[in-house]
Image (cartoon, rainbow, N blue to C red; front, side, top):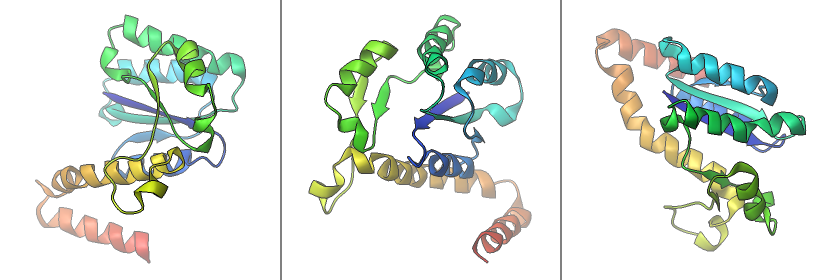
Length: 177
């Protein structure tokens, strides 16, 4: 199982990120209240439903502070319960507000995990402009989609013959017209 938690303020791109992940066959829940996150994750981890094999949730950063405060405890509980593989190696802060002085130290203190400032990687041209946390999410999503495109194309097309090709063509036409 793979779990991705996308968080940020309204307008920060959470829904765009979740839409892209949904296109990559993730089961996505947008704007889940942070207080419901522990129960939802417990359900997806323990169920044998294949739909939850890849799961992504969007959590608005404007949730009640006490509910957001439970997220570090949730991460610790996942680790204690033997789901270490679900827990990311750390937290990456992106967006313009991620450059606020002292924010990384504060996040490490709150979450008890490594925290770093995300900047776009593996891009060329206008590097002095693009290498900014403001663009990290957009560039990261483009690269993630690009790297997973080939595998997804294989998954969609293999074993379905002409029916798989027809379904892909139909989906393309429905999405573009």
